[in-house]
Length: 205
Length: 247
Ligand SMILES: Nc1ncnc2c1ncn2[C@@H]1O[C@H](COP(=O)(O)OP(=O)(O)OP(=O)(O)O)[C@@H](O)[C@H]1O
Ligand SMILES: [Mg+2]
Image (tube, rainbow over all chains, first blue to last red; front, side, top):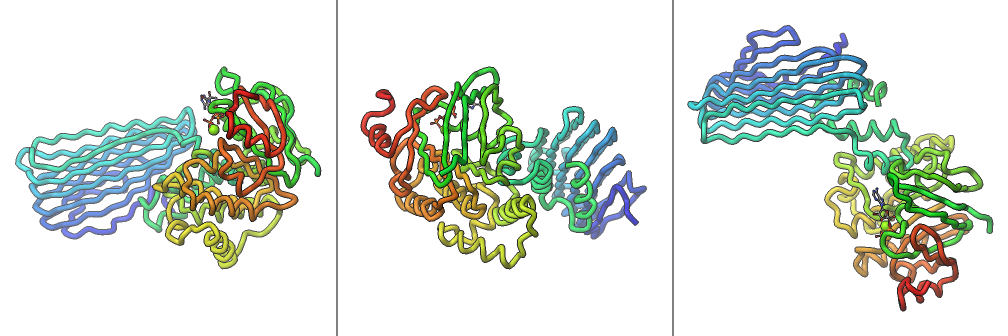
């Protein structure tokens, strides 16, 4: 079966999945638990809530989006550090072309009682056409003081100088774009999704 | 010798500013042609226009390459016809491995010539010979294109790309700036071994450093968007001795 919005849960030690309908997920990560999940969004919305319930709970959420035509998608990822000594990472990268729109909202919440937490969230978006739009709203609610937190978001077009350089080496504009788009996504997504990603690139680069 | 490249009354702008102001230049097959001129006179602009950089607009004139209208071609079509530019400031491509990139480039050229993609083993052999000649290590081949390399290493890598793609027309834009004596020797010899009757070079430079390894057939002096004088290698000495003011 091929799905347009594949996901893969690599690790779910001490993780309870409270709710899931492929578009909306609630995870509870218990003591020493480890959640690692990858999502690839092309046409559907995604809502993920991770509750880090107890000490040494950790999560890594990787999400890529590839949107085209006039698709509009919302991606909401919320990580709640409910316990002290918990760790989270969110890596989100995506590409929007045609007239598609992406709204990404990422929340890290660390209440005052949750000291010694580490929360990270990084987002990068590439806009391939003048009518495509990516909006990112990172939201950090950090009330504890002894924590490590980092976040960043960058949205922009493909680098014209890189594109030109590749073309001067004989690669067509579309081949050059594909090389830059694959290097942009890097190894964020697992091998399992590579055919889906490649197909999207072939159709949209 | 027949003309490989013929530029006639070329005018080009960046934005609304005219940079090339009626430039004429002919480079014959097999010729090494040095272009010298003060900072900002338009040397890199000329190389950008020849290779089809979309940031520059040609407003008048023509460029013929092997008798064909170069200005009608996309940058990759020009490359696959045999035009190569070693950039004054090579572009970094994070996440794009050098070997993988060169294989894609080589196969693009083969495809344009109606040839099959190169076989993986053959490619490795082809690459290793050229890498060794230019002192490019295996480690460098695995790294992303130009990322984290020193200025001199980047120039060496541009020369290496040129050796890999074996173009008919090689533009070297200040290949010799920022090279230490050893690197200059490696690059100079690398260019010099590629010299052959059907391959031409346009060497943009401020000094005679690289030209000592690759003696030019012709030297053109460029000022304010035009070629104002063309002569033999003696022009290099004149520039070295008294700059551009006497032209
Ligand atoms: N993309 C650009 N945007 C704005 N101005 C530009 C651009 N490219 C070139 N110019 C301007 O055009 C003029 C010629 O630049 P060019 O880089 O061609 O000079 P050059 O002869 O290569 O100089 P150098 O010897 O310093 O490399 C300069 O005044 C430069 O500022
Ligand atoms: Mg220059």
